[in-house]
Length: 127
Image (tube, rainbow, N blue to C red; front, side):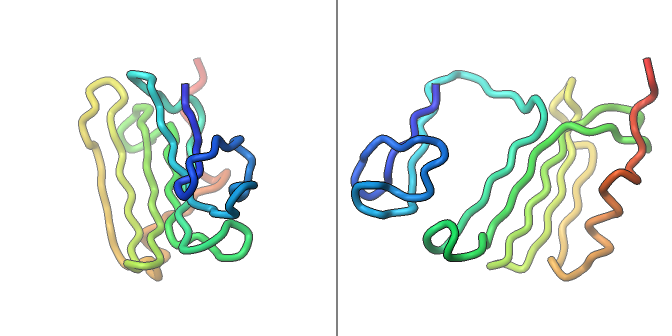
């Protein structure tokens, strides 16, 4: 079970708390005692230099499962936008073996790296 605490004062936080109610810090620590984890739909993480709601995130990472039409298999995909380093990274793993099946990285301004996305993405064959 995950436990979220304020990084400044140690107070327990609720998942939706934008900042610590005791000291006002937006920094948090997340401890997870579970042995394993899995992505069922998608996971989104954001990193900020400041209080949520006052500054935009400098780091955004999304992990989700999706169908690869070129490799004809479901994969786990991780996409990271890092504004501080001005980098975009994309990595795909085979769900069965954990092997990296595809990877690319480049300037965050290069929209060609990020692909079409959205509903135009091919879907897996119907069963």
